[in-house]
Length: 293
Figure (cartoon, rainbow, N blue to C red):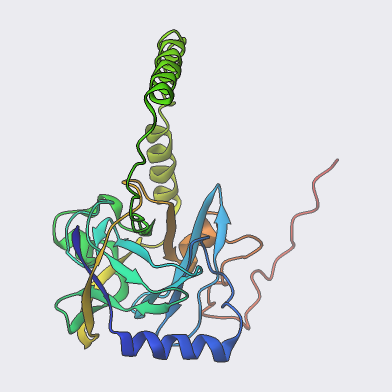
């Protein structure tokens, strides 16, 4: 079993008490087994989530510290393997599902504030230009701009097995004959059809992302490696029920200006540009007439 990280129980109790006082989930949470949202730590505001072309987006403020808030919505422990910009936030490895993560007790909620540096500290997440992000500075710029949480259910304990009862000889022979008949039926069954190959969507998605990047008026945001903060954790064991995540949550992010330009934020218009001489008319001459129809 993998050695995993979980939150300090005292901190977990504090988070649960806070949830009991709130009574309801914050708006804009994403997920089913776990509710995930992004919080601006400088303002305390939960960032609105925008759905665009099947993806979830939030708008970050350049320079602002942020946290990823995760809440276990069920009555059993879950494991959350979390990545930011394609990097595991606990180990610093290029993110993969089978890596270490945070284990949440039933109904537990907490904010992950940064890159884990030890059992006692993290380096704060903050929005910054993509080239200054931790991922880019460590030679991994290809996945800047996305937050991911792979959620795993825990494997239930194996119940104790009862001792088999001895069958009379006639009953045992009858059972063996029935088992042989079932095996013959199964062996005569037609083989399962091979699954059709999945369509090549990777290139289309990458081309769309490149087109969106060209349309962005400001540099893309990434996540920086900020100042160290106290954030104690303890260790526990967790055996996953399956090798693949039971839920995969992805939230993309960029600046508000870029999301408006890319059409992610609907109905918004860019702020007007300032005018050096707002009191002066544009022209003091005869204007052109309207076009003939």
